[in-house]
Image (cartoon, rainbow, N blue to C red; front, side, top):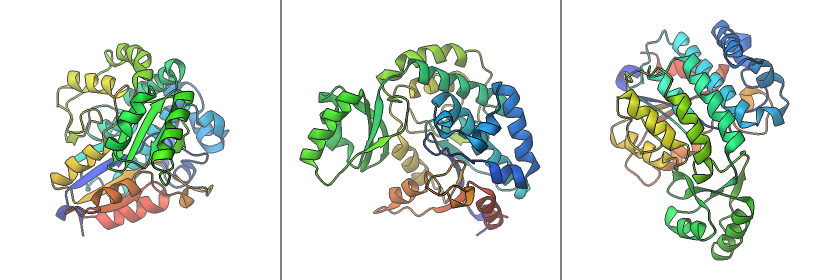
Amino acid sequence: MSSQDQQIMFVFPGQGSQYVGMGSDLIRDFPVAQRLYEQANDIVGYDLLKLCLEGPEEELRFTRHTQPALLTHSLACLEIFRELSDNRVQPVLSAGHSLGEYCALVAAGTLNFETALRLVQKRGEFMGSYGAGEMLAFPLHLDNIQSMAEKHYCVISARNLPDQTVVGGLADDLDRLTTEAQAQFPRKRPTRLKTEGAFHTFHMITAALHFRAVLDTVEMHAPTIRVLSNYTGSYHDPDPTTIKARLFFQLFHPVNWIDNLETAFRDGITTIVEFGGGLGTGTAPEDKRPNLESMIKKAQRGSDFSVHYHAAINSQTLREAATALQP
């Protein structure tokens, strides 16, 4: 099916999908990727490309490095895809999970690459410096975990799926919550996420207050396509001032990812293309699997929605996606 017959959505992953070696194939195969990484190095003021290619992993995992690295990789994938498809595959909307929302705004023309990279560099610095706590992903519905979490001074940080809820809090509080949740739901084991803090919770308020001053200074434009907001679960208002406010609130409110997906499904999206990042134990880019694919497919189960999905996260999948979607 060509792109002319489809309503296409571009999506971008968030933290947790970074890995050492990320971008190595893109640099090898596409000059546009080399140029983008060289530009990124100049913007951030250190060798971001070397960190992505060689690590060490513990350095790449620091939020201040993860966010620029993932944004650059995701947008390199987007630029390569546009080049491979002669820019003829046009989305009608874009979305991203947490950090990925900034990539979605670049895809929509609201931010340029330099502005987005400077924003996420400061965002990552503030989140790492002023944040606290940790995060757990529970395979439970919001109604089953929210009141229990609040009892232990923990709060919801993301609603990824109806049966996948992420909770943030201090380590000891999360341990007590885990003990109670395991007693009540013994077959529903949570997963500890590798983050520097309880993102999208009240533990990020100080970081958000520092970030607001940065947001206030940047230039944004009205999006050329619709962009989904993690904060509201629906579409961003086209007013750049409102977009900035919602990015501020996003830092200390839950990511409503399942609402983003269901909004897109209801509005007739037929195809989703995911750009950037990768998961899995394999070391090479071609060994990685996409971050958001599983959530996108699970969100359709038991519904009337049926959406085609394409990964565009390395040289191989970029070529495959561009070929499949050529008009």
